[in-house]
Length: 138
Image (tube, rainbow, N blue to C red; front, side, top):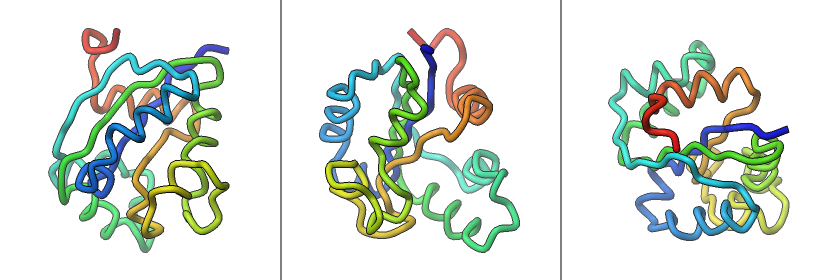
């Protein structure tokens, strides 16, 4: 089934000049990028985006980190895009990620793990609309 999902290259990935390598991995996976932009979230925007994690011990540090520098946000499209991109990202804990995944190759920390991806069709719909309007998605 053709799906859309949100992908983010987090501040650590942007700072380490990993935009090109991450985009190459996405394209090599056969996923299409239908929207992309460079943004810098405020703390309040990061809190809104990650509101599903509010109250969890990592919420404060996550929102601090995600508002600490620029991010690249993208809409990816393809057959089973959500599961395919999640597999390409690798486990949240990069030490448990499969070889060849983005996090296995580039992450340096469980939080500074280079990328984010939607985990369900419902979260993809919320996350895509958080950053993009319909006119921005090709």
